[in-house]
Length: 83
Image 1 (cartoon, helix red, strand yellow):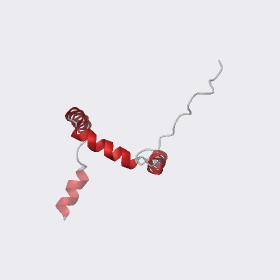
Image 2 (cartoon, rainbow, N blue to C red):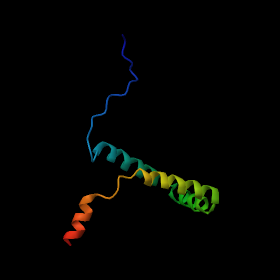
Image 3 (cartoon, rainbow, N blue to C red):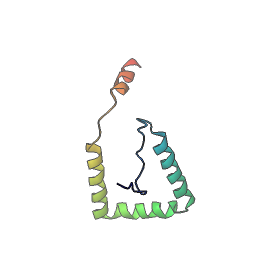
Image 4 (spheres, rainbow, N blue to C red):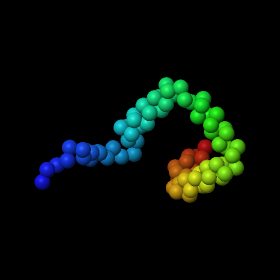
């Protein structure tokens, strides 16, 4: 059986704090800023938030994202009690 040359190599699990993913994210953000599109996207976001339908859709997406949150880190509460 011939192996496909287009197969993606298995990604090593770097665990929490994945440096590879962080580096790729940072590079993508830098490319976006350098693209000169930041102001245009900010203006578009302002228009979108004023549109009732789009705003409702964004709020719904936010609620879904928040519903998947694991909650506050218990260490934060312990630290607050110590202070």
